[in-house]
Each structure stands twice: as structure tokens, then as C-alpha cells.
Image (cartoon, rainbow, N blue to C red):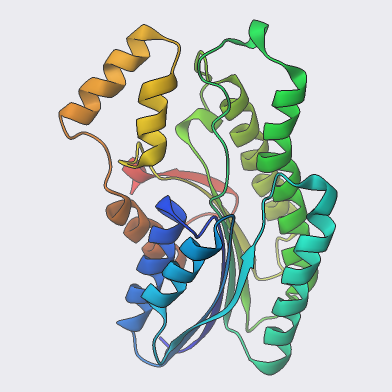
Amino acid sequence: MTGHHLCIIVGANRGFGREIALTYASTVAAQKNVKLSFVLIGRNLDQLRSTAQSIENDDVHVSTIANFDLGDIDNLDENIGAVSSAIEKLIKSNTFTKSILINNAGTLGDLSVTVKDYNWKEAKRHLDVNVTSFVALCSMFLKLIPVSSTNQRVIVNISSLYATRPCAYWGTYCMTKAARDQLIGVIALEEDGNNTKTLNYAPGPLDNEMQALVRNTIGDDDQRRQLLEGFEKGQLVNMSDSAKKLVNLILSDSYKSGSHVDFYDI
């Protein structure tokens, strides 16, 4: 394998987004003659810098660190514009063979209440973070990275089982994940023939901070007991294991564009 990959990771400051960056860097480092340029986006600057320091070497370079909140809709154009300018400079000075946008950023919503107790303003805030900003990022990427027979464009949405299956108390989460899955499917159809692929990847029930938050806040006693039992029995998915499956999937190109692939499917 030879080439130069541009990897844009949203939510790279911690959790699964950070793990994807570490895994992509280490996996490609094991290959010969492959270079990597990262653009890392997240809300915590110190954490982003930590991710960058963990992956940089002679063949892996973090070109841009963008520190902003995707829920800040009033400044979304300005923030994404700054990222666009940085990527444009990279494109002008490098020849990429694979350009990837991986969106791991998102919010859970309030898992303690059912839909009848929703506040629409709070629901809108979650829609802005999870869907509106996702639309903006996908649009930016498709406009910015030119269609080329020598540079494959890839958009990955970190999805969930709940994008395809409703679950009580998960209303906002199910709604936003389903919306993102559908957008990914639409892009696959619209960009068919343009050396572009899209993927919805459900990483499984990860053993991370988000799962701990779910166990502590879910309003359904039965779900809480099941989640706690799964945690205590070691049934949660290691983030590194899930990230490896995703990275190998991207590098092997062994998926149908627009599809939804679960950790347990591979």
C-alpha cells in the first residue's frame, strides 16, 4: 500500500474519536510508504493536543487542531470556514490518495425522561449538535475535496443500533442517529460514480464514559439493571477492538457505500 491519507476526525479529543485517531495512525504506520495528515476537531483544546502528541511521527502529521463546539450554531459557519481554509492549504500542497471524514461527535439527550416530558428547545439543541452540524461538515467535505479518480473520498458516521431500532427513553438519540444514517445513504446515491463512499458504523456498546453516563441517568429501571449487568460481566466492547474493526474496514474498502455496519457484523 502506498499513498497519502487525509483523515479528518470530529470528536477526536477523547473517547472513541481519540481511539480512532490512535488506531488509524498505528495501523497505517505498520504499512510501508503511506503518509497521514490529520485534522482533529473537538471541544477541548488540551485533549486535542494530547491526541496529536500521541500519534505524530515521521509519517504521521497533525496539520490542524480545531477547537470549537458543534452546538454553537451562531458561529458554525465561522468555525467550519476556518477548518475549510486549513484543509484547502493541505490540498494545494499535497497529493492525497484517500480523504476521510469521520464524525464521532454527538450527544445522548436526556435519558431520564420520555418524549411527553421533552422540552423542544432542549431537543433542538441536540438536533443542532448531532444533525445540523453534521450536514454542514458533510457539505463542506464534498465541496472541498474534488472528485478524482486517484483520491477516494470517504465519509464515516459513527452510528448506533438505535439508528435502526427505537428504544424507550432514547428518543432524541434514536432520532438524531437515524437522521444521520439516512443522510449518509443519500450521499452514497448522489455521489455514486464519483469515487466516493459513505459508511454508517455502529461501534457496539463501548466500555467508555458515555456508557457510564447511560447507566447513571437512564430512567428505565429494567434497562439500568441490564446495562449494569452487562458492565459487571465484562460484556461491553473495548474501544480499541472496535476502532480496529472500523479502520480495517475503511482501509480494505470492503463495505457497500451507504450501508450500516455493526461491530458484531464483522
